Image 1 (cartoon, helix red, strand yellow):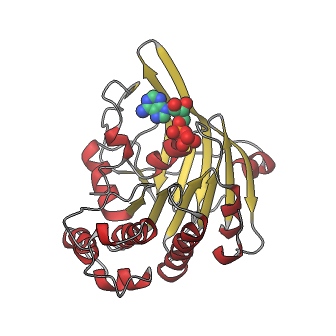
Image 2 (cartoon, rainbow, N blue to C red):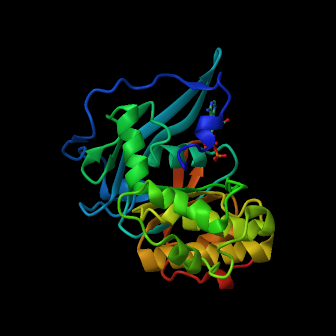
Amino acid sequence: MDVMGRAANRPEHWKEVEWKKPTESLSRRPLPERRGTAIEMAKQSSPATVDAVFHVHEITKIYRMGDVTVPALRGITLDILPGEFVVMLGPSGSGKSTLLNILGGLDVPTSGEVLYRDHNITAGSREDLTQFRREHVGFVFQLYNLIPSLTALENTALVAEISESPLDPAECLRLVGLGDRLHHFPAQLSGGEQQRVAIARAVVKKPEVLLCDEPTGALDFATGKVVLEMLDRVNRELKTITVVITHNAAIAGMADRVIRLSSGMIVETKQNVRRASPSELAW
Ligand code: ADP
């Protein structure tokens, strides 16, 4: 269900330049050779380490609408470590969603490679990408996309049913503070509560990666903070890699690492010495 995200809803004429032909299924390839000085690499990526879960290597993404080409990503190199909480900041149009969609296997780059552990997810077929998403990735979008006719528990259990070794749906709802709202329908829940159900639904399949596209974008300050507290808790308790994209710079304090994008490029990477609790954030 989470694969029916934004990319799938984009207008039909918004086609990427080229869908890479499947050359091989999720292949085991050596990591790409790293170029540049240590300082250049540090500017672009986290410390180069074989333990990284994601190796993103010089990816570009060019969209075409008729005669107009839009370079959404212009050469991104980035590693993401196990259990890391990453906040990606940048103005609208800077390429955040495009990068998130590529990390989550909802889209593929025009050039460059993304390795998830030792699998090259940019070299596989659509089916391989679907399998990658299903097994490893949970998504949380700005709009909650819950099924209105199902309760919070049923919305969460639906994903558990199609997962190999899911967590207990009720436990996931308790984790996000909704233990007393299991049998409520979305219409009986506030926006923040619905977003917390969406988080429970995303983590019930126990993904290694949780990708969040403006998760507090539709929420007021107080409610947004509660949602961030739940993301923080999920990251700490389940050790799920969490990537949150936002244009709200105040959220940066709760991250392990803050990556700033501008015009499709990483222009700044900052490691927080201490992760702030979401309750300390103000905007
Ligand atoms: P952000 O998430 O930072 O707002 P996006 O990744 O959504 O940025 O978009 C980056 C650029 O790519 C923008 O100029 C946007 O208009 C363009 N873009 C994104 N998706 C598509 C698409 N499917 N087709 C054409 N252009 C797109």
